Structures are given as C-alpha cells and as structure tokens.
Image 1: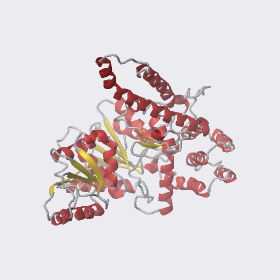
Image 2 (image 1 turned 45 degrees about the vertical axis):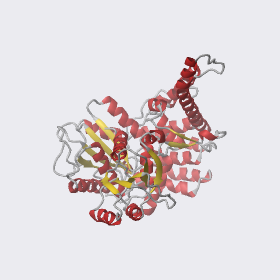
Image 3 (image 1 turned 90 degrees about the horizontal axis):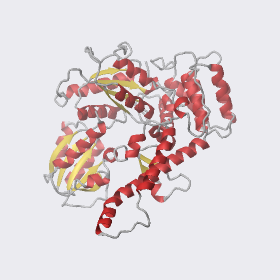
Image 4 (image 1 turned 135 degrees about the vertical axis):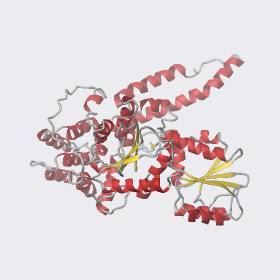
Length: 545
C-alpha cells in the first residue's frame, strides 16, 4: 500500500487520457502541492505538460493549441472559477478531474457553462486530508486510490474520531458503486485516532534524519528553507528532500544522526573518487563521449553531496548552539521514567542555563506538566515562575496550560503515562554524536502500543469500537491509520519498523498534518483558545467526552 505511488499513477492516468499533444495542467493551491510531492518538473515535462497554471489566476493568456487538464478540489470556489473558465475558454479542450465527489447540481452548472462544448471528460478522485470536511474527503479518496473498502474502528474517548468515522462510512455507503472492490479474505481496516491521546510525542526533540530536519528546519512539501543559514550559497537557499528522487535521503531518512554523519563522510569520499579530475585529458572521441555521458551523473551527485552536507552541517550547528543533546536527555527522562525527584532537579538545572532557547525551556515545562500533572509534590508553579524570570513571553507561558488542557489526564482515553520503575540506563560518555541511539531514542509513541495490540488481536473493543455490527475475526492485514490533529515523523518511523518486522501486515499512516513542535503548539493554542467543535489550524476540535 503505497499512497505516493497511487497518487502518481492517478496523475499519470489523467495526463495519458488526454492523448498526445501539448498540455497545460490547471490546478488550485492544494492540488499544486499534491502534484509537486509526487512528480519533478522534468518528469512531468516528459509527458508533454509544458505549462502549469492556477485556476484562480486572472492573468493567463489564451493558448488554443494546448489541451487543459484540470485537477481541482471540489470546492465552491473552484467550481465557480471553472464555470467562468468554460464561459471564456482559453484552451482547445478540457479534461476535468475533481479530487473527490462533486454534486449533480454542480455538474449541471458546469455543463450549462460549457456553451462552446470544450469539455471532453469530467472525473473525480483524491487523497489529501486537511480540515474537518477535507479529512472526510481525503480519507475516502485515499481508500479509493488504494482500492480499499475497510471496516472502521475509532477511538471511543474522542467525539471527533466517531464523527469522522461516521462521515467516512456515510460516503462509502452513498457511493457504494465506487467502493465495490474485489473482496479479500481479511477486510482492510481503517483506524481513526486522536492526537490529544498522546501530546508528548510532538513535543520531543528527534534524532533520526527526516524527523530532525522537520523539527529543526521544517519540511514543507519536501522543501527546506535554508535562507537563514549563515553563509548559505544562493543555489542552496531552498533544497528539496524527496525519498522518490534522492537515493541518499531514501536510504538514510530513518537512521539516527550519528549514522548520518558517517554516511555523509562516505558519500563525500565516494564523490571524490568518482568526480572528473581537472587535469583529465580528453584525447579521443571515446573519451569525450564517456565524459558527456557521465557528466549529468556527476552533476547530480555533486548536488546531492552539497545539499546533504549543508543540511547536516546546519543540524549539527543547531544541536550545538541549543545544547539539544542535554535537553533531549531530560526530555526522554520526563517521557519515559517515573522519578519525580530526579526529573524536577534536571528541569530546574536546565532552566538555569542561559543558552537554553525559549522554545526548549517551555517544552521541558510542558513535558513535566503532562508527566506529573497530578503529583502531590508537583513544582509546576515554581517552574512557571522560573520561566517568567527567564523573560519567556506570556504567549509561550500560556502554552503550558494549553497543552495540559489539550492532552492532559482529564482528556486522554488511554494510559499514556503509567507509573513504572525507572528504566536502568547505562549512560555513555561520548564525543560528538556517539551514543545518540541509546540515550536519546528511548521513547515509544503511544501509536506503537496501539498498533501492536491491534495486530495481536488485543485492542479492546470497549476503547476502540467498530462502526457497525461487524468485527474482524482474523489478524488485520491492511491497516490505514488516521490521526486527527496530525501525525509525526517519529510515528512514521514506528509504522516503517512494524511494516518491516511484521510479515503479512501492511500499514499506512495519515493525519490532518505532519507536526513538529512549533506547528503542534500553534494548533494547541488555536484549539484551546477557540474551543469550537470544528477543526482549527491543521485540524482537531476541543470538545471531548
């Protein structure tokens, strides 16, 4: 079950269905992001797509020699833009693809606008979840892309999970012909969860490559903004990290930072051996041909080396500048152990460090507040006073209470924090990055236990009921997990490892967004300050059972 491949295949079908000839791809803001995630510009140019335009752009020229492939979300705004387009068509013929189900009334409105009969085809599919309405559309679209008609389980403690489950089921029932796929011996399963059951995972610093990049630099549609990196060259101000087109990234995105450093060194040494030498003589036609044939490969390798050396170098600088190894060690202690005396001493000690960033200071207090929320000897008021003395902004201080309101014990439906004896860990003395994997990756997201119980047939129906009377008797094979309020790359790593270690089980992870700490805290503030029952920001609501 490869969602990226499914998306790529659908885009290919759209383009190929229009036949030979020069084409323009007409998209909206969201579908532009979808296409850019699965296709490079050079790849899509090979399919005779020579122009990319936005449906809401007012300054497009009339080009009657081009065929238009419209790939749009079925929003009222997009339908209205398309009606205006069809009344004054700029291209010879239109192939229209909506990303989800469109109403008959809207199809009728489009047909009436097509007075010049330029529309050749109208279809609809998608896979992109976002806000509450879009979560339903996105989930059903992914199911269509993967050709799955699943049984549905949801988190009982979350009203939003039940509402989303019912909404997805309603679409499946209404569009039953679209979901009439070949039956499998064991039906696929859709499991809908709520981020508020585990507010700890998005607050932790990460030590695997992909997760670190998103946490410290930010990944947006596979792009990283490096414009603020000291001394950055012009061509590296924005770089793309895509596992589809970058072999080094694909092979290293789940490895820890210590291993990345070693592999970067090996990559550079390999490049040094392979790169064309400045004094290399091109004495024969054969020499010249070999150089020309190989140069694109060297150029691509040179770009890969420069990109990853720059990214890893900036990660290393931030780790050192913000003293993240020391910070992360205390974070892991708060997340995984149950020694209040040691925890409060560690947090107090770090809050005295003037080099500690405001974000790191606040997240340590948040983790303490979540872990020891109801401890009889809680020192949370004292820690809040310390944040004030450090000059931490009022907004950041308010985030501490907001996180407890969002994911505290009153809200959670699970035993996220179960008192256990402190895990005995032999702390290693290390230089640089040695020992990262042992000390800094103790934490396991709640999702790991949930999926482990699900695969073993032990996930309680009383906590995660089925929608409808049926239930699975056999071990699930195809599992789609959706996290309302956003997933994290640490959870993506959990799914990756479960897929590798559990033969016969295939898991796909989705969510209303992919969080790092900053985006998670923005959402928490949005939800807890508004308190409405619609998804805010990247998506969830605060009304709990």
